[in-house]
Structures are given as structure tokens and as C-alpha cells.
Length: 186
Image 1 (cartoon, rainbow, N blue to C red):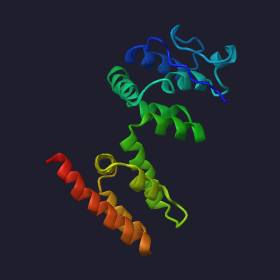
Image 2 (image 1 turned 90 degrees about the horizontal axis):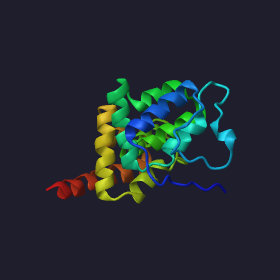
Image 3 (image 1 turned 180 degrees about the vertical axis):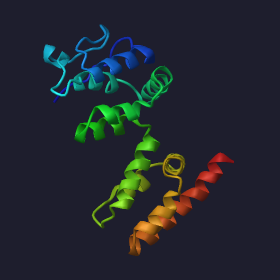
Image 4 (image 1 turned 120 degrees about the vertical axis):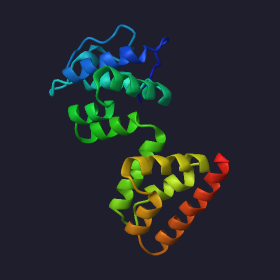
């Protein structure tokens, strides 16, 4: 099993953004304070000309708040969203993993919830997991992120795209947490 080591001093968001931009272009020279774990092979870009290992070395060693600061700084510095750049530069399962990791937890749950609702099957338990493992406040944030991203409510999509007992239970549950979340804000 691999071990992740956090740098003793975390680079500034601006430095991380610069390194990410270089990684997108295939630069193989990391900032001196980025810790690589096993060998010089981590420094080489992959066949696509992009340095996936450098992207991982940066984003995997940051907290949610630090990744949020990197996203903000990246948008201010380069005039485009980091998530869009990631989407443009990488693909496949690696893209999905990196993009989901870079999102705030509520944004990530909103996207996963939307995918689950759109491709609904009885074996898809993503909505159950989100609903059962998040606090009322977390669910409220998911609901807000969902509405901001998709311009409709999670409850409407659950009602429109699910059926049977699952629809009744989840719709009721999400309505119940909405009233609980309103009490949190009061």
C-alpha cells in the first residue's frame, strides 16, 4: 500500500496553480517543495504530454479548504475554472477521480446524486448512502449545491426519476431534512 506524505510546508495556492498549469502542459519539473513518494519515474509525463503524477502529487496532498483556495486562485489567475481545465486536459476514469476529488464534498454529492437519479436502478444505492451518512447540515449543503449546479431541486429529480417504494422513502426523507435544515439556519 502506498503512503501519502504531506509536505512540511504547503505551497501557496498560486504556486500550486502554476504547477498544475505546467502539469497540463507536460512539464516534468516540479516545485522543490512537492514531495514525491517513490522514484524519479513520478517526474515523467505520461504519453498524452500531461503529467498525471504531478497533478496527483499536488491535489492528493491538500485539504478540502486548500483545494478550494487553489480553485479560486486558478480562476483568478488563468480566467477559467480549474474543473474545466481538468476536464479539458484529462479523460477517462482518471478525469472522473480527479474532478470529484477536487470538488467540495457537497458539490461532489450533488453530482453523484444527479448521476444516480438519471441512471436509476434498484441496485444504485448512491442516494441512500448520501442520505444516510450525511448530517442534516451536510444534506442542506448538498441540496444547495444541487440547485446551483442543475437549476432544479434534488427532491424534484428524485420524484421524477425514481419509482415505487424508493421514491416514497427518499422523497419523504429529503423533505424531512429540508425542514430540519431550515431550523439549522434559524
